[in-house]
Length: 106
Image (cartoon, rainbow, N blue to C red):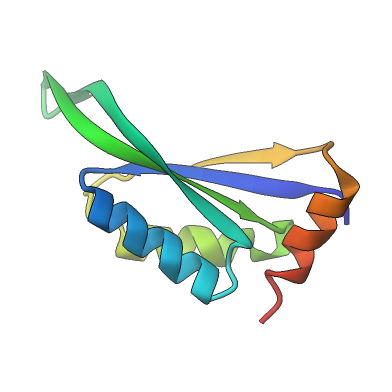
């Protein structure tokens, strides 16, 4: 029970980030979600380089809730090809990991 996952995405509006965060936590797919400040992203899109302002969202979840969380983000995400990155945290504060597991139970 000491492992957790951090899922990160970015969206084009703070309001969208807030909705994704709230839905994941309310649905117990994530124990918490953090919306980060604006970042300027530069990337390839449709044969050209584009730059836009985005907001990041980090979700903390238990490994057994990961697939459902990723599915919800994918379905709710406004981008055609959303960035959804998963990091598996192998070590951390045991009490925090326990808290994440407890708060991702339906």
